Image 1 (cartoon, rainbow, N blue to C red):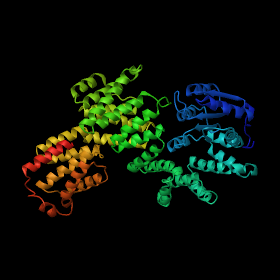
Image 2 (cartoon, one colour):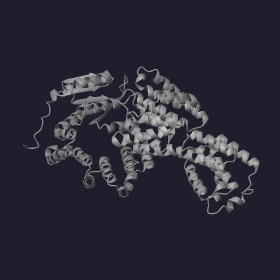
Image 3 (cartoon, rainbow, N blue to C red):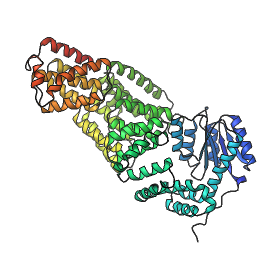
Amino acid sequence: MELAAQHKPKRVEDLNVLIIDDNILVHDIIKKTLNELGLQNIKSAENAFYGLRLCAEIQFDVVLCAFNVKSDRDGFHILEEMKVKGYVNKSTLLIFLSSETDETLVNSISELQPDDFWVKPLNVQQITSRFSHALNTKRSLSNVYRSIDNRDFGQAIYYIDRHLLNPELKKYQNHLLRMKGECYLKLREFSVAETYYRELFEQCNFSWVHLGYVHALLKQDKISEIEKQLETMTQKVETRFATFDLLAEYYVDKEDYQKAYEEIQKAAALSPRNIARNKKVWDLARLNHDQKAQYLATVNMAKYAKNSIHDSPDLMFNVIRSGIDLAQSVDSIESYKLLNRIEAYIQELENSANSSDFKEQLVVVRARLLNAQEESALATRLVDSQVSIKPTTSLEDNLDKVKVFHELGKREEALILLDAIKKQIASETLSGAVTAKFVEQESKERSEIHFTPKQLNSMAVEFFKKKKMAPALKSLEQALQLTPKNVKVALSLLKVLVAIHRSDGLDDGHKSLAHNTIDVLDKSQLDEKQSKHFNEIRDELIGGVGDTTTQATESVESPAVVKSETLVTMVDEFAQSS
């Protein structure tokens, strides 16, 4: 029996059509036009709830969905849920409607791969011509779409090659060529895909050809061959979003998590609705100790997931957890405001109808909040009486328990739970390379660093006041390790180095630390006051971090003696900056 034996497409009059739009006039014009084209089975829904309920009852062959469905959720989340639940697939004719065409929306929708994107207001001629073409494409290439739905990409390529030889299907050639390249990539035939796309450059110069070619070469670690091409593609509106995404994936594979983080942030900014991508931003932000970006990523996830298939209390817990992390790394005023906001979020969860389902999670975040508010005794009693060291099935819940144990000085319990989490990751596929790396990093840092950045800052101030420079420096090094983007911590560290430089001179380790910290601050955004302090410190240290300390010491009183009034001034500035 030949492979070409296939299901016949439905007759046009038998196709089931669904229109989701909150504008009745849009329904009327589409219905009337489709009726004239022979389609009769047309259902309408003015919001997502009824649209999804209809999908649960009827298998639709054609779905037209608007972005702005005001009553409950936007079209992006409707289509995303339809795909997740299997209501639509590659064989479904999927058309997106919107009066908005900003880049972030177009990027978000392109990820869902609709067959067409219609810009409102609609007119009969537009609907007739574009719908007819899209429907004919879907029906003429139905065996290819069905193979892709079944993830039989080899069979899809077989059908594509046959169709490319058919003169009657010549008008679909570019569409077929694109799907063939995508199938090679799905099959991980990257060398074959590279050759295929390179040959396509001689026939056409579409964006998808460049993206496919770059994808194939990145997967073969041939980034040096396409550096100029990547530079061009990251500047073009039609390719930059997908290129940033590909680069982020490439750098994760290479375990260069800092560069991966930089690229995924750019991609997320251009397509903010994608929850999975915001999760990558969150994972990479915490791996790179960027507490502020970590918090913003969880806020975005909660915001864009509202009323979507992703919506759950877990998202708000992530906002709370990352908010407490951030509060422990910023100054008192910002920390106070943030903790008040977090307390309101916790109360909202505690007052929710299903709060009994996540009782222990609430106790953990409440205890962490109390500890951050310097109510450690109360937090300890809460944890001792209501929090178990036994790990749950949730990785994030377990990581939060590690944090509360560690923050309350229960380091043995924290490390025991971290070991359990490592085994959880090793035995399950619930987390990717980035999360696994983060857990590994957490285990190392929690065993070596026993305090929060805020506590380390406070300790450094006290050590500095008592002229104990070595422990002050160590505290700030650890604080900077946990908050590498914290300008105030970096400036404080340099001030300690200045004091050491004036009293005893800098050894090679001090010089290296000074160089690295100056490099960090050179790349940071400083306000006017911070810039002034930084320039003064750098000018004094610049000789001390060179090959000798002679030049630097000539400009101060005596390297072995520090004027008392100078030290008092430095202590005051240091305490204020920390």
